[in-house]
Length: 91
Image (cartoon, rainbow, N blue to C red; front, side, top):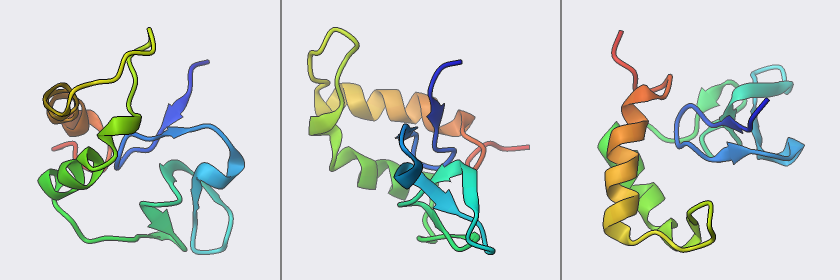
């Protein structure tokens, strides 16, 4: 099984500390600690606002071959990927 990704920001959930928490304090398996805490989202943002927030960290995004993404590549990737995430998916 591949990595699990946050269904709000797309961050890979690798270690236990990456996971958000439910209202009862248990681990949430769908969202990261930055997006979801105590059973609710940490920010009331639109998908576009989330993309802009994540874009600030695009220097840490790497292709599988280790090359860095440009800001433009990161933006295009997020604009394609985010609408597929649970938080942003239109029913």
